[in-house]
Image 1 (cartoon, rainbow, N blue to C red):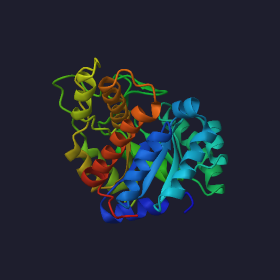
Image 2: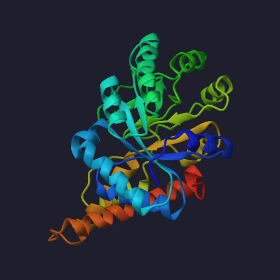
Image 3: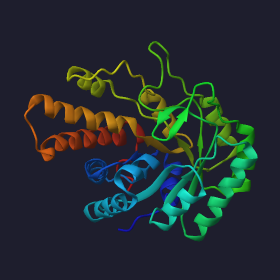
Length: 311
């Protein structure tokens, strides 16, 4: 099976009241863990690559790893650029085999966001590639995305129709209270998603796929493992999974998951290294990390996304 776009994925997800997991990939073990889980559960999946991942692993290596995963798993897989900073980065990924790109011009003015997004859409659609854009800004830090709490802003529902109409974008990431990174909220602060904004956006954009960024739940199980094995993480509070399930049953067709994967992978490596401090074979400790990633993705597909058996 060849790489696919997210168009059919999102149409089925919207109609079926579930969401597709968009999991960030950085190396072979993470690609394997994600796709083995999705393959076993017959779930479509989006593998997404950030600017940081492209710098670390190289564009060509990542594309070939994803192509290898296609040979091993008979499921729909889309390859997506996460938070493309400008037209040139998006163009590079479009020309380099990606089937979906995100242009993130949300930090510009509304009109500038439209102009930049429209340029990417025009080029991408000529190549059969779909485009995601963003209105509103999430707080937090993740790779090259750095937005302070003061700079963050919710999406304004009264802007979404004009934005989608003028850009021709295929999906829209909105800001309703999620946050990038592992440390989303201060201890004692209760996470709360603005479902009123999501509902209003859905009314204004019927049958249109909505995306949630910064939606890792930051499993306390993995945080505990890291702390027990020498880590110094403080309390990490993510988005409660019941809120994500509610979002997945609505217009949200794509839920991004990155920090949970990093914690799972790191927890596995720490477990293996602390169990055997003399270990020197990366195949042994990375294997444990890979199994953690697989278990996490299986949990997300079954208990949060609802995409099992939807391939």
